[in-house]
Length: 287
Image (tube, rainbow, N blue to C red; front, side):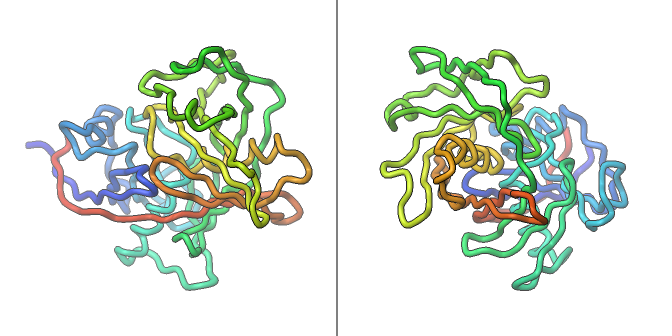
């Protein structure tokens, strides 16, 4: 008989996940089982799996935080971080009573990119993604729907991204992201690929605004990508120069997210804020 496990379905601006509780770390989900859970026709359906496990129960966990977010892409591959996923993960911890988060307090969550603190925000939850890095080397991006290759800017927010600026909404809307864009050179770890269009005007009342679509590593096009939203805002902020604002709104097909840059311990950190929703729960037989 196949093993049956409980699950909860959740999403952050349409970026959806299968949440699997495993507090004591007894599950060893294979890539094939992850892919089956995420299959939208034969499984539950999702862009990835969030395994809820105590840090002490896994080698990758940091016991500075009780809970470790074991995030796996829809193809089963491991990812360093997921900006939408960590908010959904936090919502699950709170709704199930596994953690508490008072107003003004923070909840640390261990990830493959270290321990990240989350707080409540006007949009739902805000996560400090930590330090970021703008890559010096340019990447050439080819995508179906673009007449010529475009330059992309590498941004690392704990996981790798390449951000491409487009001049108009019709070019963004005309992209066919059913086919993976090609990168030259190909980053060693691969990359999430974001296409952005700045708003006109770019800045209103001290807040910058952009639109974005994304092709996620190991998944394909998704309605939203939290770390990709942060990377996109950071890229446009970099291109805009010293006068660029530190607060941004980013519209994705699944909704709107907030990004801000602030000093923490004398170093610039990037913060991501947005909603997190739990949809339904049930049980499923593992493939």
